[in-house]
Amino acid sequence: MKDKSIPIYKSSSNILDEDDFFNIKWLDLNIDSLEKIKKPHRHDYFSIYFLISGETIQFIDFHEYKVQANALIVMRPEQIHFHVKAKNAKLLLINFKEQFLISLQSRNNWHDIFATDVIELDSDIMHSFMNFINLMIEEYDEDLKNKEILAKLFSALLDKISLHLKRNDSLEKRKEYNSIYKGFKQLVTVHALEEVKVSDYAKRLFVSPGHLNDVVKEITGKNAKTLINEQRILEAKRLLFWTNTPIREIAYKTGFDDPAYFTRFFKKYTGLLPSDFQQKD
Image 1 (cartoon, rainbow, N blue to C red):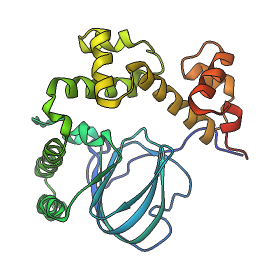
Image 2 (image 1 turned 180 degrees about the vertical axis):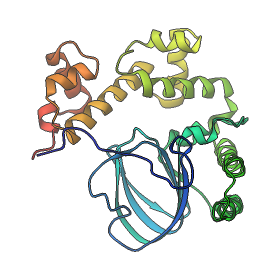
Image 3 (image 1 turned 90 degrees about the vertical axis):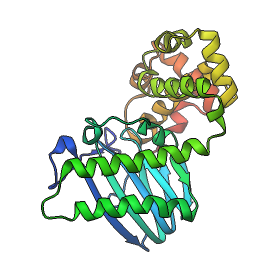
Image 4 (image 1 turned 90 degrees about the horizontal axis):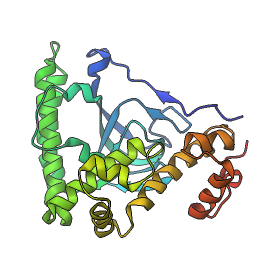
């Protein structure tokens, strides 16, 4: 029998208060699993894996990634994941909660780093990141750790990663479009289950629905409504596959008043009936 809900593993730290959760650890792996947790789960914090050498296979929200060094693997709290395999992998793992950085102002939005699951790097860029990481580890290993110093060093590292992404982003030349699209994506992640109209998001972003649709179409090749629907489908998939929630209840949870319409909607986007997608016991 499946669990009734997707497990969320809470932060635990003897370094800082729970609200200011932050930790660093090295992982040297040539094993079948990166975590002792054997089933898909979520965390209540952000994670960044710096893959220094070797390779690993990750399963994140229905996508399997085979990642080779040098690379970053990033995970947001709401994502469902598990670690599949590792081969001669050396990784540095940083876990943190947003509260750890809340008092610091930055010119860059570190949330942008978590817009994709895997970020490929070259060895020179990884080396430049390690300069910041080594300073962080030195402070982290002190008997009397200084939270402010750690937070500033970590913020600088996130800024460095963010600037690297901007330099390699071909869309950066279109700053207005890029900003609107990123705002739209963040809003959809949070509100797609209760706000299903493009006009809802256009109003939040202070643009017209037509302009928002043009921006999304230019960047993704899809219209804004499709991205909203895909987010709703993703949440439905999560509930169908990893929980034993009844289909009727899943329909209501994902914003459908009519379970029959939900079934047609799901099949349109996936080619499967919800009952066919459910993981069987």
